[in-house]
Image 1 (cartoon, one colour):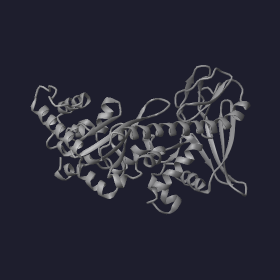
Image 2 (cartoon, helix red, strand yellow; image 1 turned 90 degrees about the vertical axis):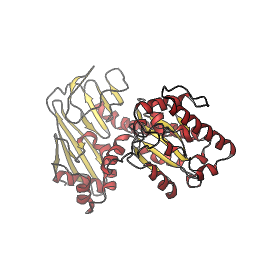
Image 3 (cartoon, one colour; image 1 turned 180 degrees about the vertical axis):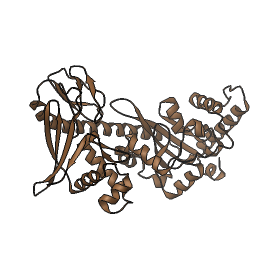
Image 4 (cartoon, one colour; image 1 turned 135 degrees about the vertical axis):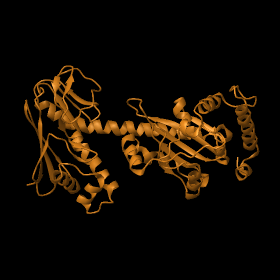
Length: 403
């Protein structure tokens, strides 16, 4: 531990830090991996054993090389955590400047996607390689709250020399997994770290509570989307013959007609046929915010036509799906900015990357964050009819000129 950090510890923390330092050194000298004589928690010893087997150097741990900015952005969009970054920030960074702590959110690979802290703490974290894009798994940096929480699949708090690498002994950290509340899939890790002097036994409870609040927020947001989709689904299902159901982009069922209820089906993909019990083979047909799956569409390919129109007050997007069972029509009011996006993609069927679309819509290729946010909102209407990387319409979509 750095002398300055030791001076900041109260008597009990200083004594515990010294105990752990001696236990760490004693364990490293024991090549057989026997338990140290001084008190060290079982979960820490298990992590040390994993870390030593991985070949991490406890004396000269290397700072992980961060991923490129575009890869971090891709991982952020794919993480499912973007909607709750604000919730976690509000829960964990109040007073962070005074506490000299940093909040970290990672993906399931322990890659740091978001970081919030005062500038002095950021600079100190930078020296450890605790930066955006760095991978903080046990394989990369040894025992640490993020990597060990991932390895043990449980909330983890570490103090001082419980970390495997010596340069991390001046820190304390607490981390908790965040899961998809519907599927249980691990979305990432939320972590709070700071100088060892900021250790508090309640920090672990605070981080775990913030993780549960994030999961609750994701649950509520999903239920709100399904509720909105049910309002769209009711009149559509009333107009079709035979069994059918309306689902969101992930296959969660909003409404069912003419068949037993179910919670989820496979996630539909634009232009890809599906086979469902009670329906048979069908093509997913787009509806606002989701997909209609109905019997009798067979495997004859559907064609989707988009038409922009203006009723004098607000632009509307008219969608017509033409398939074996005839036509399915619906319309949705959209913003002028979404009209610009639809028009730009209609002019570039080969697709545009974020910079190209920002230039086409705003005349400024640097506004990639803004255009990505707008595309995300538009895709809630069009779903899989809009593809990404690059942004473009799905192959079966044809765009008619605006009125």
